[in-house]
Length: 477
Image (cartoon, rainbow, N blue to C red; front, side, top):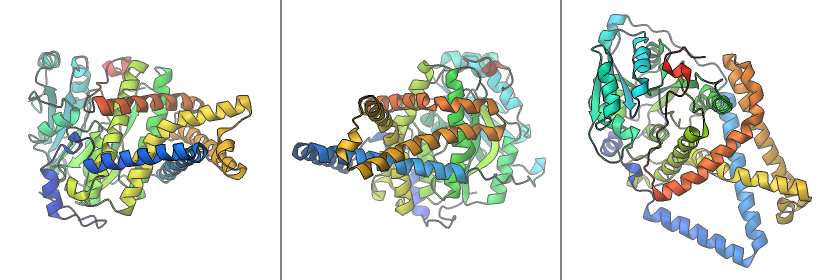
């Protein structure tokens, strides 16, 4: 059944917008529009002129703007996380097994031969009638190693392989888009190769879709690592995920902002996903982009309490490329949704949408880029007694700026410490004191993302899996 957009009551997008969106899956193929290039060049020109006229004034303007942008971004994160702490309603399933809908699971795979056995076991563990289940293992056509691993595994008849034709770009969203054309289910969900969803997750999603009704097109399950105790990095990664999926996304939904989806465990009404245009093959954070697009088209996005356990990167050589791709995808998403509605074939953002795009999507990039500079200014002032803020501003404004930075970083550490407590992971809380190290790595990745955005924007940095014992069949820890 097809549910037209605009039923949520927030925005009246109308079927025409959905028709336009359905025809396009390449919004991010064009990095910048001519107008965006002109605006960026104009801003740079004005800034250079200001530095030439008054170096001190220009410095104050840049620092002040960065402090304000970072403060607004952190304020929104704190607000969303706080609101997200209220318990999530978990509707009861009222259908019998015979009445459950056909559910399609998409599992995009690339160089995942070592994960096939554990993946098959995770799918077998799902508590859902097999005759109402369809699992599509979506494999690149030239990935012979993964195809051979699948062929060696005895798979049930409700799991089948789907080859993605060779083409450009080679990305997860392109593979998912190809598989979506073959999906038969009323609902569709994306899982990654290393994912271990809770067995009842599909039933919980059906119950939530039934309870919320047709206006809700997507449900985001919670994600946490199962190898949180492996390394220093996996502990910090877990703290980040607990903040994001156990609080912040729910808070954004409750505040009626767009929900930037996670890359896995997104449950969709298939008809709504198709109507919205599916995944953008060129966007390397296709999940966040799709969450904003669904919001613009008037579809509701909600979070559910069901959890998917996945593998956290265990070392820098896997974490940095992953974070670089995420930061680059946020750049893509920002510039895509900052275009004119007519260019996108989508409804306008409105005040709330623009605030979210600037304060949250753009703000996260700015925060990651400037945070090390703030730390450097603080270190310089500490060791020399001469502060750049005091030089650029009068004492009152400098004090407010310092207070904003200290409060913001302190609030971020506090959120990191409190976030795992809801799962009873008390031993993780002290590791929040090391969060600035993780933020520094995110900042490095953000600078790398800018270079990649200019040089190779559609490259998909593959995150290797199977580097922890838990991903090879041992139960989550």
